[in-house]
Image: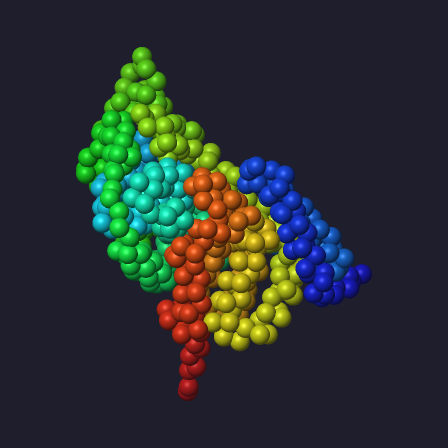
Length: 486
């Protein structure tokens, strides 16, 4: 007995997407932390609805489950990398590597080019930590206070802070979105990061030029009390020395040598632990426990930094949050989100629902420029409707993956577009979790700082421009078949 299979209608294909958008929108208003489970549940519920539609098409459950397992398997390396990112962040914190980056980065503060300096400092810190939120909530708040003493309008300073913070959120291997985008597109993180520089450098270059012009048009006198207080707090808590930069240099060398991500990150994690034992005995005793041998305290401290919560107390309360890590445990919600998204994507692919949705777009997107533009618009749509940057990366990533393959575009073209649009525009939407959070932290209304978030605004346009001009658009080389003539 054969089962009649039929193709889904556009309306049927859109039902799971619409249900997902509705559930995610409700979550924003009901839950304080939607990433803690609410959005994951929404993805699974939407996947259930999609599964019902797929079954009504005549597809067997074994076909659907096989596709779900295949989809999850494709994201498994990225989930392992995320866990290693958490462990690396932990050992780099207790070793003083990240605090040293912050400490020396703050030396860049110069009152005569304050706005540019704010961008650079926040870029350095966010690259080191992989977190735009922590950067804005700590160094960003301090810079906003300094800018206020100089007489610079808060929205302008907020724009500079956010531009710098999201630079790191976009390219740092410690950032969850930097790991999420290549996972959705099907490429590795280091290929993704290297490829992003083609659009990120011009975007940041234009941003710095604009802030230089704004800075020279502003007269101010500076006070560096806040900056000095932050530096003193870090210096008192850690043994800050340039020798700590040996570890990131080694990791950078491994990356440039194209050593695979997992062994590179494991090496960075272990070296961070070794340097913590050598350079930070006080931190080891504080986090490992008093009254025990240094060897035992070292083991406890390093293991805790790898898998769990670690908090460093300093004399400056505003940076204690920045110096706190959650190790692998802190990545579990993102891993959970990826798993749920893969289930949703697997169901949608099993029934050809994503293909049915993207078919009208593909009919109109006859060039790489049109396809990239459609992706940017879709990411912006989900940032505005789902109110979450993770969803704005996950759903379009699954929707457009096959479309990019059919146009012979390499997966890093998709992953870069997801970052240039999904990550960058999230903070520009007042009701998005990113926009609402940064507005609350900085005390500046989202619509007030939006005109000055030049990096976030320019990035998606540069991505579209490069695609239309065919600049650094990587294509899959066709396989040529050689015939033997007798």
